[in-house]
Amino acid sequence: MKNFTLFFYLFLFVVFSVGAQNVYFPERGTNWKTRQPSEFNIDGTKLGEAVQFAEGNEYSGSRDLRIAILDGFKKEPFHSIAGPTKKRGGPAGLILKNGYIVAQWGDIERVDMTFSVTKSYLSTVFGVALDESWVESINDKVGNYIWDSTFEGEHNSKITWEHLLNQSSDWSGELFGMHDWADRPPAEGGIDDWKNRDMHEPGTFFKYNDVRVNVLAYSLLQLWRKPLPQVLKEKIMDPIGASAAWRWFGYENSWVTLDGIKIQSVSGGGHSGGGLFINTLDHARFGLLFMNNGNWNGKQLVSANWIKTVAEPSPANESYGLMWWLNKGDRKMEGVPENIFYAAGFGGNYIVVDQKNQMVIVTRWLEPSQLGNFLQLVYDSLK
Image 1 (cartoon, helix red, strand yellow):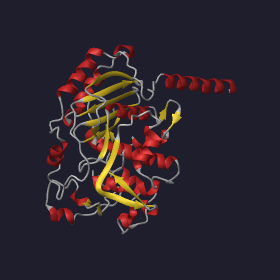
Image 2: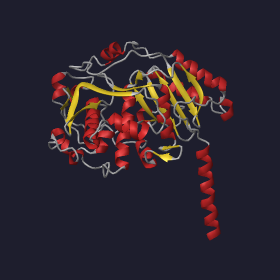
Image 3: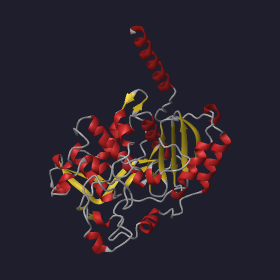
Image 4: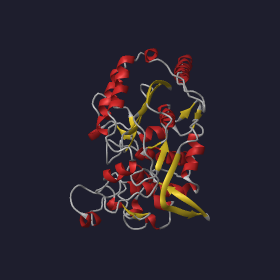
């Protein structure tokens, strides 16, 4: 029995070692290695059709993102652009298999806004804080850490880190001049209805809301006590060899004084400007880290348990994890593996992670309604 047990564990070690060796991790500043799709038993012709589809289905909004933003969120009362914006480029993307580029299109080095894809980076900053024991548990009440007025009151005092991360907090209040009730208001009713809305018990009701996401960013700033872009750079982006081109912005009025120093509290998206500005290659590196369970070429940057946790359905929305979307529930895309999880942002920005097939798919400025059709074409190319 002892010999069998020893053999079994030796077998597992060999299997996992071989699997890890099969993943390529590009070094910083070098040309990312490419491989022909056929080397991975992928039909190159069909994969080419997927690329052509992405190129031919560009997001229909204006390339002047100030116009696209104001048009896209015109129903929100008091909505304005409070942070930086940037005119965007055309469709661009990368498809990785085992870390190698098997397809690419557009200008993959161009820095563009990425809107709510930023949320998945923000979630990762929390994951690192949890790994490093700045937070004891995801179920801890945020008010136990952030003792200013942000989480005062019978309702807000119940909110946990998990509630903020899965967008079920129903946090009520105003942050940097923005009201929670004015962010993506319901289709029915008017301003009086929205201001006097019914409250939902934290954890029971999903509501996609950037003001509450910004509350998470503000809370993490208080926790780390240094700029979140600096945390992301040191803990994640530098170790994965990301470029020096990416930036993470907040709003003109989102500066806070912390330990006697003025620091900008960054936004978790760009629908009022700000958020993460980044190129496609850096997105792909980030996706590759998640594909490989938080391990970059032998170095564990964020725990494998955190990667698993972000991709678990939340109680209030089966389609949403911890600031990552899942291919489940109401948003399930037919013909696409259920195991994938993905970051998604306004204007058709996506990072799709497929651990089972060891693939990462990054696409920029794809018409959002066409994501499922695009992914179907990609998966049709797998033999």
